[in-house]
Image 1 (cartoon, rainbow, N blue to C red):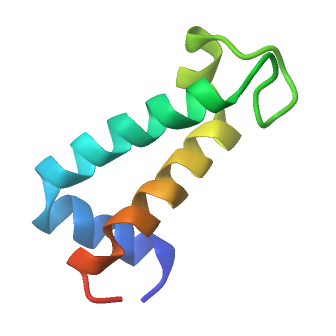
Image 2 (cartoon, helix red, strand yellow; image 1 turned 180 degrees about the vertical axis):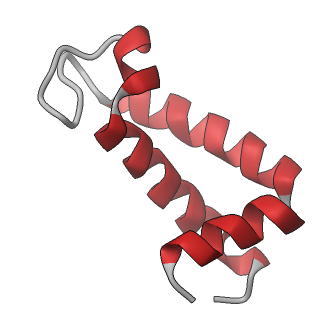
Length: 72
């Protein structure tokens, strides 16, 4: 199962867990960034909401935390 399929499975079957974990992972990663985002630009809440690299990292980490739910 590839990453896209895992994400869809988690969203379809475990939406509440996905949303809670994604939010906490986003907050956790945001707090770890001191001044610069993972993409190299100045980190701000507004920037992070639209940053592709940051959001891909959030989704990757969220999937890692929830892998036990899909038996991967």
